[in-house]
Length: 422
Image 1 (cartoon, rainbow, N blue to C red):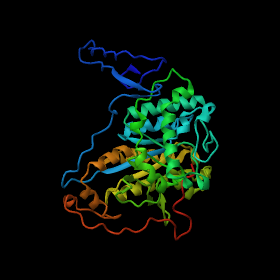
Image 2: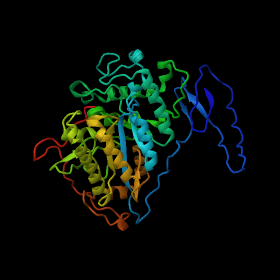
Image 3: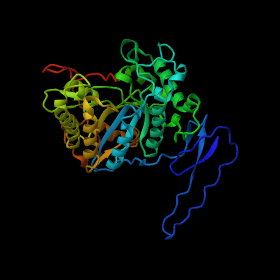
């Protein structure tokens, strides 16, 4: 099915089939002063039932470049969001604006059930669960429509649409117990739900998503950070180039597992405490209040501590080995929304720093994949706190140093690693 789309890359699907040729875009016109040109319309090809479309190259992406000898490695920072739905808090749209003002790109890990109406829940068949089961709620129609609009707009701004899979099953009968075949089924369904939202909703008045999800989906984050061993076993056959499901990673340069980039949430300092915390809003919250409805009198102190934690992780990398910093979030209002304020402060602070690039996971793996493997191997020898001599980076790498295991417990009591339950 073929249609013509406006310059922003959206197309309204009106049903039926159009087997005729693409219409030619109108010639650019000039304004009264003869200086302003109206951009030509961009033709696109609708895919399947018109839920998605091929609009060509994604706007806002920068072609990755191989690091030149002697050049300082950029400090990459990835802000990612689990679930990625728009509701009455309007956090999806809020952070699109923050990212625009901060020159940042983000990764949105979409939960498949967020584009499936509850009335059509029988179309989802989770592994080892009843048909239509989900441990997260289905969105009402208003929020589902808002979410579809935000997803399309975000992609057109250069943000990545990854996957948080579908029903968010955790624990003994959830993702932690799944086989590689279970993960393959879950990803196939995640793709299918995005590619058939129009059929599942019956809506003909919303634009098609401006991307081909078979091509766009190259990675995700498992619910509760569970089941990565089987997930990585399945990853190559699912078209994944990376996985962001591991926890407790140290701030060192990443490597591949089973041909897939393993991009973990990391241990970063928690100022005022003797242990480190996972670089995710849920884990910061749990180590502060152990509840999403804590003491309001402590909100400002907790917000400041969360911001200081993210900044400590950034500064440690920026002034040291320049390992990419990965920060995970949810669109949430825990403890009065203080974690949203903390991550916004962080984004506005670090993304405008010299030699810093706030990118999506897609951007990061594109950059990693064009580098000299010997250079990446040498980067992996730099431990936390190391100050590399960047002028010698392109030289033959030394044998990789043995790195200490990731922190999993704390001497002062309390766990530094708390797996995400949301």
